[in-house]
Image (cartoon, rainbow, N blue to C red; front, side, top):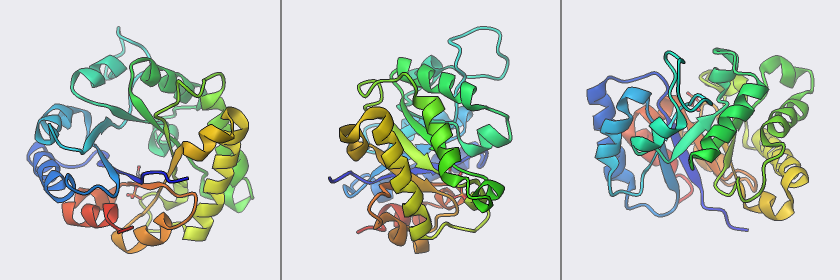
Length: 252
Ligand code: 13P
């Protein structure tokens, strides 16, 4: 089964407007003609529209880092799915570990956000991953399994046609401690198996699973050549166009 690699650049809460525009333009120049992988950038909310303008007509996808599950109303500081689509977003991160562990999004909130994204026609990147203490106590598979099950319960294969899953071990995010290709592959294989249990083997063979956590151009190829690693979700290293482009092209 060949799955087109998919590489995301999660800019998190970084860059000023000019830097964001410059980065978008450089990413476009370096990658829009590259057909070996699908590329998506996830800028902060205020830069979505200016970045959309820089990427218009290119193959680089645009996504948001989060959304609120309600459609509208008195939710100060929140952004709805329809607002995201109206500024050109096609993708959205759901359940990123910083949303779960810094902002307190629990499994129920993540499930609601996933449904809001799907209802608006946004393609979700559903993020799962264990904390260091969970890995150390042998709970990695159980934690990722719970995060998947609670998010996906009751959804159908056709609703989830465009979903991508990202395995991002919390201990690897922003720490410089990238998971080894073997460590990541082991969890990816388990995630694919669990998705198969929930949604069927045909779907599970097609769904793309990204790895995220301290990825650099030096570690990208080793990860991407693993059987069940179909892409990467890149934080810090996505803020430099040259480094990000090298990651996207790492598989050759
Ligand atoms: P880093 O690549 O900075 O570790 O971040 C990973 C991440 O959280 C991507 O969503």
